Image (tube, rainbow, N blue to C red):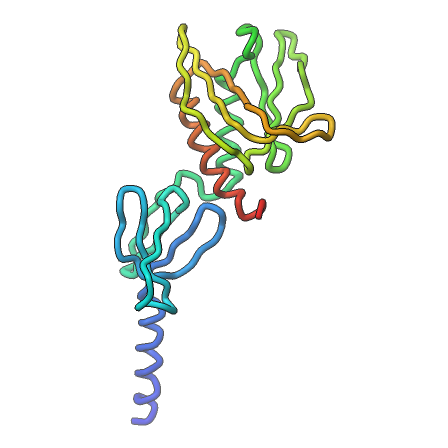
Amino acid sequence: MKTEVYILPLLLMSTVCYSQDKIFKKNGDQFEAKITEVGTVNIAYKELDNLTGPVRSLEKLEIYKIIYKNGKSEILGKYETAEEAKALIINKINEFGIDRDDEDFKINAEFEGDQIKINSINKKGKVLNEGEVWDLGRVVDFHHISKRKNNIFFLNIVTYKTKNSKTELDKLVIKMTDYEAAEAVLEAMKDLKIMLKKNQG
């Protein structure tokens, strides 16, 4: 009988601890909470150690996944890791990117850590204008995709550029030949910025 008396509180305690919602953010942070509302843009929740306190709010674009107390999960982000987002960015730019001034030239993108380098390549495969790297973890503004004639689309990202050991705020312009690819790159860059916040902080 004594054994049953001791086991029951432990079972109840584990049930209480488990029956909470778990939020996984794109920057790698995760925490348990009591979600009170899931809206189209934000989720509302209460902190577990202050359930009688104020309701907190978190933008859904910052969240990768939610595991609800009933065990069901909801995936809100496309990319679980920064490496997945980087791979998409590189693949789409290298497939659909072209030089801003000469459409006969392709562009080649690659990451150096959390910074991206984008160079033009001529028909012989020679790299042009090498040296600039752009910090996607410190983006100040993502502009809307700009559509031009002949199915040309421009991505404009305001962020910090480093060249010859000098860093300054500038605009990264990426010229692409496919709208869906440009849209995918823009979305991945926005997610990547959130994921890199933890490392930049």
